[in-house]
Amino acid sequence: MVIAHFMPGVALKGTHGLSSDNFVTAIIVAVVLGLLNLFVKPILVLLTLPVTFITFGLFLLVINALIIMLCANLVDGFAVSSFWTALLFSLILSVLQSALFSLTGGDK
Image 1 (tube, rainbow, N blue to C red):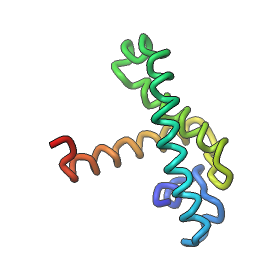
Image 2: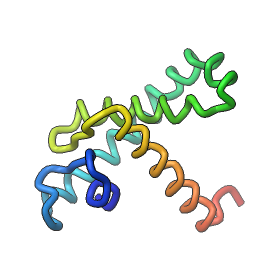
Image 3: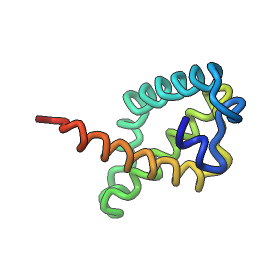
Image 4: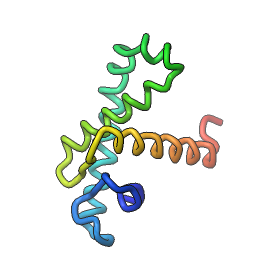
């Protein structure tokens, strides 16, 4: 919800202010993104392994952007305006997840 609020091109249903619809939509987006990352992303990573290797892993951001765009197509009330917006969204999401992972001391 925070990223959708501050980033133009990413929108939740009725993004003006906080509402229960926004919260429910954000939870649904989180669940769908989790499921897509669990089931679809490994297949895409495996299929694009040579490109990912050549780009030193940067192609994973493109895969994340594709996953976000797929999520936007599947979840009603969540919209991403373009591929570049999805790519920026995936970059911000990756940085925030990495920071949260390091703050919580994961994998100890």
